Image 1 (cartoon, rainbow over the protein chains, first blue to last red):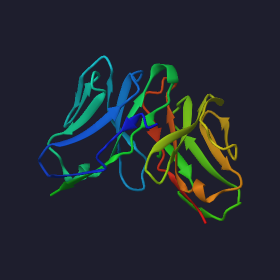
Image 2: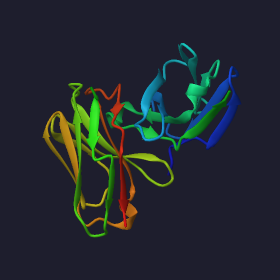
Image 3: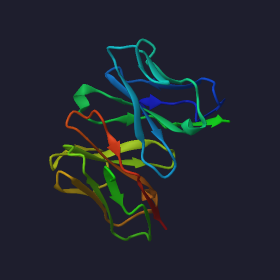
Image 4: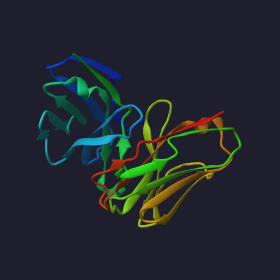
Amino acid sequence: DQQVKQNSPSLSVQEGRISILNCDYTNSMFDYFLWYKKYPAEGPTFLISISSIKDKNEDGRFTVFLNKSAKHLSLHIVPSQPGDSAVYFCAASEETSGSRLTFGEGTQLTVNP
Amino acid sequence: DTAVSQTPKYLVTQMGNDKSIKCEQNLGHDTMYWYKQDSKKFLKIMFSYNNKELIINETVPNRFSPKSPDKAHLNLHINSLELGDSAVYFCASSPWDGYGYTFGSGTRLTVV
């Protein structure tokens, strides 16, 4: 019963191009969504988040889009840089569950110079 | 100065042993967590403590026992280790509302 899914285990893009990472969820009670970035041998680090009352949130090169009707969110990175190469985790939470995060399985992004 | 530090980083041990993983945070956060990343790479919550009080306890074997001596520490003790316990364990902390998680760098546990 995986409530957050990232169906692409890996993505490879050229430096300077756009990277689009996708995430789907099944629990309609989720009201807050986050993206985390993880380098090898390190813990996940927070990247960007979005509340369910919004459909877009932007922070520099990173933009997260939320489509509640489709239960889908995506992370856009423009332009992609080699240092962006990492595993990206999508996560979601619901107000009634307190501070519990439900994670997807991650997508390995590789940005080629 | 590491915000959330956990030790050890690597732990190799034999089946049946008892081991502990320690976690400390210096962010002044009220809530601390243990997450497990299994072989399929999913990060799943195990426990959550708020001000030393257990608030989330997922379906985890009772061989796993968290202990929070104070708000800044949450240790994980595992009894009678099994092969299936091999995973990466992440400690994390956040303010009381759950926004702004900070993770430790993980402890890779290998049971042989």
